[in-house]
Length: 350
Image (cartoon, rainbow, N blue to C red; front, side, top):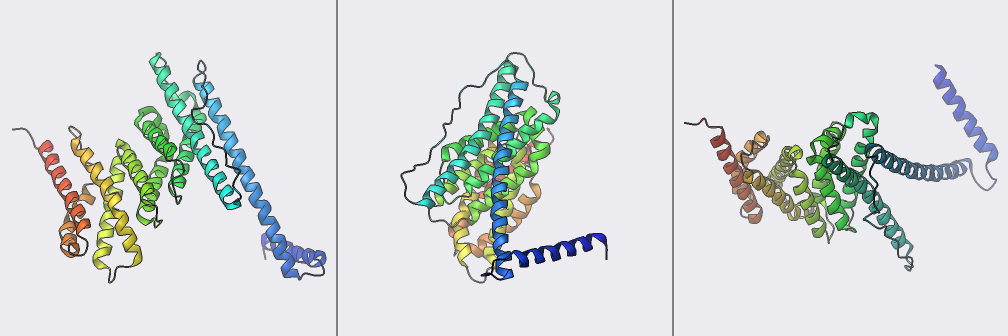
């Protein structure tokens, strides 16, 4: 037996003896052990919550320090987004807790959004005055930007995963800030190295929320997420991934419908939801076609596979799912047009 195993078994024996000797007379050793475990679990939860609060405070201080270091001659104005206070008149504790969780989530999103927005605005002002922003001077302090960006993405996805949209104005503003960051060549080069995988995962999670949501009042939420996906997918660095992801989701759903022996409840829900993804994909494809001298989307393989399957899908599903087939036909038409224009651009001049 090695030393580690011996110490572990000795510790377990000592803990068991301590529980047996200290247990109250009205409880068994098992009941007392479970009671102690619950107490420790509650304490762990409290410490975990406290650690999260401290981490948020530290990140906020890092944000302020970075802004004051990067732009020493500039000062931030008052916050544009006032904090929301809970309505304490409610007698329902569950409602009060829910309101507080909404406020905490909103404040977190607003805090990171404000920092990133201020950073972009101050960077623009500095460059307008002839001061070129040099990210290399910051070194490890640039992690403040990536950490804030990552936290903003988490808050965005978490908010969109709620059963209702409690602060849609804030969410729209957050998406706009993210797209501005991704459109800035200097900032995006810092973000993409550490956060591109996070960006991809966030888009996958948003697509999953749209497709699988079964809440009765989900359509306003899905419309808001769809708009966010269009904005994010419109960024050049995310466009290929967004189109490829949406192609896979729509194609996979069409395959599942064709091979399902019976239409289960989940397919009824997803059938209602898939049109949001179809519209997002259609809008991204149209945007690509409208851009002058647009390059290939980089999703040629997914497009070819989709075009190969589309006729078969329409043939099998047109009677039972005519509206879905119309969307498939429209997407196929856009793809064919895109491929024709790509060939014309690449064709050598006469």
